[in-house]
Length: 87
Image 1 (cartoon, rainbow, N blue to C red):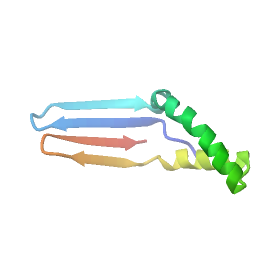
Image 2: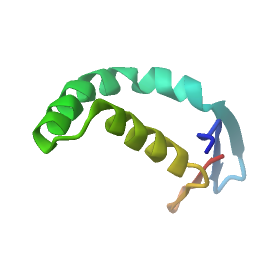
Image 3: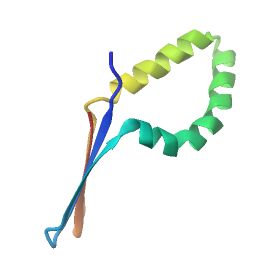
Image 4: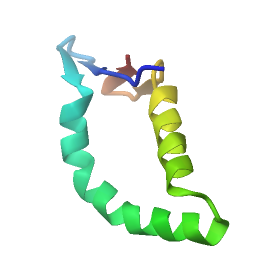
């Protein structure tokens, strides 16, 4: 399995202005790094309490990343529409 590599953002407004942004996933990981650093101790504690091995946790995290591929999110409002696709 291959994890996603691009996230496409498309923002349209009622005035017909369109913004299209393909962003590589590794740039988003840099933005999410502080949250991940805070979550790691909680995940390690949870895995120790549940009896999971560290290798199994890495496997589950990898499977989670791979399952994000193909996710589509659409948000429509009166003023603008936002479309996000993870490829």
